[in-house]
Image (cartoon, rainbow, N blue to C red):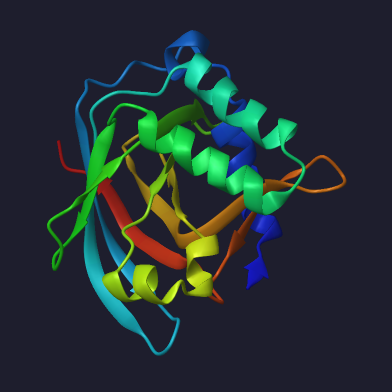
Length: 196
Protein backbone atom coordinates (compact mmCIF):
# COMPACT_ATOMS: atom_id res chain seq x y z
CA UNK A 1 0.00 0.00 0.00
CA UNK A 2 1.27 3.43 -0.80
CA UNK A 3 0.18 6.96 -0.01
CA UNK A 4 0.66 9.44 -2.83
CA UNK A 5 1.37 12.98 -1.63
CA UNK A 6 1.24 14.16 -5.26
CA UNK A 7 -2.36 13.01 -5.43
CA UNK A 8 -3.49 14.71 -2.20
CA UNK A 9 -4.51 17.72 -4.30
CA UNK A 10 -6.96 15.52 -6.18
CA UNK A 11 -8.76 14.57 -3.02
CA UNK A 12 -8.78 18.16 -1.79
CA UNK A 13 -10.43 19.18 -5.03
CA UNK A 14 -12.83 16.25 -4.76
CA UNK A 15 -13.92 17.38 -1.33
CA UNK A 16 -13.41 21.13 -1.25
CA UNK A 17 -13.69 22.66 -4.73
CA UNK A 18 -16.56 25.07 -4.35
CA UNK A 19 -16.37 26.99 -7.61
CA UNK A 20 -17.52 25.82 -10.98
CA UNK A 21 -15.70 26.72 -14.13
CA UNK A 22 -18.40 29.10 -15.26
CA UNK A 23 -18.10 31.06 -12.02
CA UNK A 24 -14.62 32.29 -12.96
CA UNK A 25 -15.26 33.17 -16.58
CA UNK A 26 -14.14 30.01 -18.36
CA UNK A 27 -16.69 29.09 -21.04
CA UNK A 28 -19.10 26.35 -19.93
CA UNK A 29 -18.82 22.94 -21.56
CA UNK A 30 -21.85 21.27 -23.10
CA UNK A 31 -22.84 18.08 -21.34
CA UNK A 32 -22.50 15.23 -21.78
CA UNK A 33 -18.76 15.24 -22.40
CA UNK A 34 -16.83 12.18 -23.53
CA UNK A 35 -13.08 11.73 -23.13
CA UNK A 36 -10.73 9.03 -24.33
CA UNK A 37 -7.29 8.20 -22.93
CA UNK A 38 -4.46 5.73 -23.41
CA UNK A 39 -3.92 3.98 -20.05
CA UNK A 40 -0.54 2.59 -18.96
CA UNK A 41 -0.54 0.33 -15.90
CA UNK A 42 2.99 -0.47 -14.65
CA UNK A 43 1.82 -2.65 -11.73
CA UNK A 44 2.87 -6.25 -12.33
CA UNK A 45 4.38 -5.57 -15.74
CA UNK A 46 3.32 -3.02 -18.33
CA UNK A 47 -0.25 -3.30 -19.54
CA UNK A 48 -2.04 -0.82 -21.79
CA UNK A 49 -5.65 -0.18 -22.73
CA UNK A 50 -7.93 2.60 -23.85
CA UNK A 51 -10.29 4.24 -21.36
CA UNK A 52 -13.49 6.07 -22.25
CA UNK A 53 -14.93 8.49 -19.69
CA UNK A 54 -18.38 10.06 -20.10
CA UNK A 55 -19.57 12.86 -17.82
CA UNK A 56 -23.30 13.56 -17.93
CA UNK A 57 -23.53 16.11 -15.13
CA UNK A 58 -21.41 17.66 -12.38
CA UNK A 59 -21.81 16.86 -8.70
CA UNK A 60 -23.30 19.57 -6.50
CA UNK A 61 -21.72 21.47 -3.63
CA UNK A 62 -24.15 19.64 -1.34
CA UNK A 63 -22.84 16.26 -2.52
CA UNK A 64 -19.24 17.40 -2.00
CA UNK A 65 -20.00 18.70 1.48
CA UNK A 66 -21.84 15.51 2.47
CA UNK A 67 -18.83 13.35 1.52
CA UNK A 68 -16.36 15.64 3.26
CA UNK A 69 -18.49 15.73 6.44
CA UNK A 70 -18.38 11.92 6.61
CA UNK A 71 -14.57 11.92 6.49
CA UNK A 72 -14.29 14.66 9.11
CA UNK A 73 -16.79 13.10 11.50
CA UNK A 74 -15.37 9.58 11.53
CA UNK A 75 -11.81 9.36 12.87
CA UNK A 76 -11.36 5.64 12.21
CA UNK A 77 -10.26 5.35 8.53
CA UNK A 78 -11.92 1.95 8.06
CA UNK A 79 -15.30 3.15 9.37
CA UNK A 80 -14.94 6.42 7.47
CA UNK A 81 -14.44 4.52 4.22
CA UNK A 82 -17.38 2.23 4.91
CA UNK A 83 -19.64 5.24 5.47
CA UNK A 84 -18.14 7.13 2.52
CA UNK A 85 -18.70 4.14 0.24
CA UNK A 86 -22.31 3.84 1.34
CA UNK A 87 -22.93 7.55 0.73
CA UNK A 88 -21.15 7.53 -2.64
CA UNK A 89 -23.14 4.54 -3.88
CA UNK A 90 -26.37 6.38 -3.04
CA UNK A 91 -25.44 9.41 -5.15
CA UNK A 92 -27.02 9.58 -8.59
CA UNK A 93 -25.03 8.45 -11.59
CA UNK A 94 -22.98 11.30 -13.10
CA UNK A 95 -21.49 9.36 -16.00
CA UNK A 96 -19.63 6.17 -16.85
CA UNK A 97 -16.19 4.70 -17.45
CA UNK A 98 -15.19 1.74 -19.56
CA UNK A 99 -12.17 0.12 -21.13
CA UNK A 100 -11.94 -1.78 -24.40
CA UNK A 101 -12.49 -5.02 -22.47
CA UNK A 102 -15.26 -3.96 -20.06
CA UNK A 103 -18.96 -3.18 -20.29
CA UNK A 104 -18.58 -0.05 -18.17
CA UNK A 105 -19.16 1.20 -14.65
CA UNK A 106 -21.25 4.07 -13.28
CA UNK A 107 -19.47 7.17 -11.98
CA UNK A 108 -20.91 8.75 -8.81
CA UNK A 109 -18.96 11.98 -8.41
CA UNK A 110 -17.47 14.50 -10.86
CA UNK A 111 -16.17 18.04 -10.28
CA UNK A 112 -14.19 20.45 -12.40
CA UNK A 113 -12.06 23.45 -11.46
CA UNK A 114 -10.22 25.98 -13.61
CA UNK A 115 -6.46 26.01 -14.00
CA UNK A 116 -4.28 29.09 -14.47
CA UNK A 117 -3.45 28.24 -18.10
CA UNK A 118 -7.09 28.40 -19.17
CA UNK A 119 -7.59 24.66 -18.92
CA UNK A 120 -9.34 22.70 -16.24
CA UNK A 121 -8.89 19.90 -13.76
CA UNK A 122 -11.53 17.19 -13.57
CA UNK A 123 -11.76 14.85 -10.59
CA UNK A 124 -14.02 11.82 -10.75
CA UNK A 125 -14.72 9.25 -8.03
CA UNK A 126 -16.81 6.13 -7.74
CA UNK A 127 -16.91 2.77 -6.06
CA UNK A 128 -15.07 0.04 -7.92
CA UNK A 129 -16.18 -3.32 -9.24
CA UNK A 130 -15.60 -6.10 -6.70
CA UNK A 131 -14.78 -9.54 -8.08
CA UNK A 132 -16.52 -12.68 -6.87
CA UNK A 133 -13.17 -13.92 -5.55
CA UNK A 134 -12.62 -10.72 -3.52
CA UNK A 135 -16.06 -10.89 -1.96
CA UNK A 136 -15.89 -14.62 -1.19
CA UNK A 137 -12.38 -14.54 0.27
CA UNK A 138 -12.84 -11.20 2.09
CA UNK A 139 -9.53 -10.10 0.58
CA UNK A 140 -7.66 -7.13 2.05
CA UNK A 141 -8.30 -5.25 -1.20
CA UNK A 142 -11.89 -4.73 0.02
CA UNK A 143 -10.46 -2.04 2.33
CA UNK A 144 -9.66 -0.03 -0.84
CA UNK A 145 -13.13 0.42 -2.36
CA UNK A 146 -12.78 3.57 -4.48
CA UNK A 147 -11.65 4.56 -7.95
CA UNK A 148 -10.42 8.15 -8.32
CA UNK A 149 -9.48 9.79 -11.62
CA UNK A 150 -7.75 13.13 -12.06
CA UNK A 151 -7.50 14.78 -15.48
CA UNK A 152 -5.56 17.94 -16.40
CA UNK A 153 -6.84 19.41 -19.66
CA UNK A 154 -5.63 22.46 -21.56
CA UNK A 155 -7.99 24.97 -23.15
CA UNK A 156 -8.30 22.66 -26.17
CA UNK A 157 -9.45 19.78 -23.91
CA UNK A 158 -6.26 17.77 -24.42
CA UNK A 159 -4.09 16.57 -21.53
CA UNK A 160 -3.09 13.80 -19.17
CA UNK A 161 -4.21 12.21 -15.95
CA UNK A 162 -4.00 9.48 -13.31
CA UNK A 163 -6.35 6.69 -12.34
CA UNK A 164 -6.27 5.11 -8.89
CA UNK A 165 -8.29 1.89 -8.75
CA UNK A 166 -8.38 0.32 -5.31
CA UNK A 167 -8.03 3.42 -3.15
CA UNK A 168 -8.72 4.39 0.45
CA UNK A 169 -9.62 8.02 1.28
CA UNK A 170 -9.12 9.51 4.73
CA UNK A 171 -8.14 12.59 6.71
CA UNK A 172 -4.80 12.23 8.48
CA UNK A 173 -3.75 13.71 11.83
CA UNK A 174 -2.55 16.90 10.11
CA UNK A 175 -6.13 17.39 8.80
CA UNK A 176 -5.08 16.68 5.20
CA UNK A 177 -7.10 14.52 2.86
CA UNK A 178 -5.05 11.55 1.66
CA UNK A 179 -5.48 8.95 -1.06
CA UNK A 180 -3.89 5.61 -0.27
CA UNK A 181 -3.64 3.28 -3.24
CA UNK A 182 -3.43 -0.51 -2.92
CA UNK A 183 -1.23 -0.74 -6.03
CA UNK A 184 2.33 0.55 -6.07
CA UNK A 185 1.70 3.12 -8.80
CA UNK A 186 -1.33 4.89 -10.25
CA UNK A 187 -2.40 4.08 -13.79
CA UNK A 188 -1.09 6.86 -16.05
CA UNK A 189 -3.57 8.33 -18.53
CA UNK A 190 -1.82 9.68 -21.64
CA UNK A 191 -3.25 11.33 -24.74
CA UNK A 192 -6.42 12.38 -22.94
CA UNK A 193 -8.74 14.24 -25.29
CA UNK A 194 -12.34 15.23 -25.51
CA UNK A 195 -14.05 13.39 -28.34
CA UNK A 196 -17.53 14.93 -28.03
